[in-house]
Amino acid sequence: MMDTTDNDLRIDYVEFNVEDINAAKAFYGRAFGWRFTDYGPNYCEFDDGRLKGGFTTLAAPKPGGPLIVLYAHDLEAALSAVEVAGGTIFRPITGFPGGRRFHFTDPDGYELAVWTKA
Image (cartoon, rainbow, N blue to C red):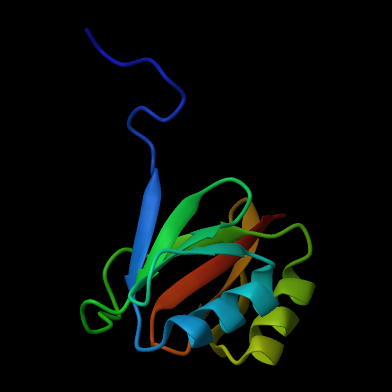
C-alpha cells in the first residue's frame, strides 16, 4: 500500500558537506533566519521553518548537483541579505514566466537560487 502522508515523494531533507559548520550556520542564519541543532562536532541540523536538512564536515564540499531554490516574498530584500551574509550573486534578478529569481553561491561554493512570484 502506498504511503499517503504529506511527505510522500517530496523533498524531505537536504544535506550540505561544508568546510566549517559555524561559518555555514552564520551565513544561513544571517541571510535567511534558519535555526540550528548541533549533533556533535561534525553535524548540525538546520530548520527553515518548513524543511530540515543538515551541514556535515564528514566529506569535502561538493558544489554543483541539484539546484536548491528558496522562495522569498521580497526578492530584493533576500538578495541584499545574501550579500550582507557573505554570499556571491552570480546571476542577478531576472524574470521568467510566472516570476523572478536570482542565483548565488554560499561561502562553500554551493549554487542556490531564490525566486518570487511575478
